[in-house]
Length: 157
Image 1 (spheres, rainbow, N blue to C red):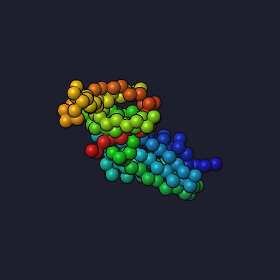
Image 2 (cartoon, helix red, strand yellow):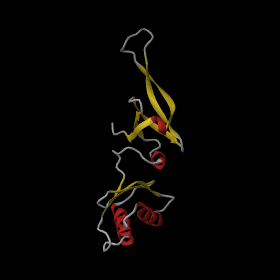
Image 3 (tube, rainbow, N blue to C red):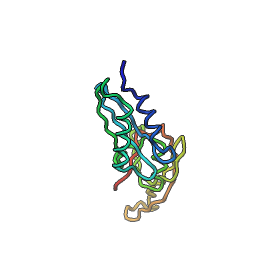
Image 4 (cartoon, helix red, strand yellow):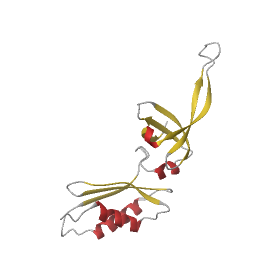
């Protein structure tokens, strides 16, 4: 019987994390027992915190029964958002939305809830006389469901 399971690791994470502040973005265990945990927090996760959580997980598992490796890290700004709380954390920040149909839109994340988020973006309004030199942009808002997106990332541009 396998002693390193996602349930055991998740239980230990639930015991160690502050549910009001910290959360698991992803947890995976390979067939070779390589445990990878990605965490995030509304105020950020430090290396010291990741190290303490790694040691806590290691203490909950038995190396004598089964060998394993543990990697605990924080969510990177370059990674797509995976958890609803990451959207709440990044309200007011620039993001790039890649829709399921392949369309891409840049904008500002205004708000989010359990089903989706609101994006503020600029749309080019063509000049009435057709000249390109008189382009103007208007701010627009649209509600986007999580199910309509392929990925959402922080925009560094």
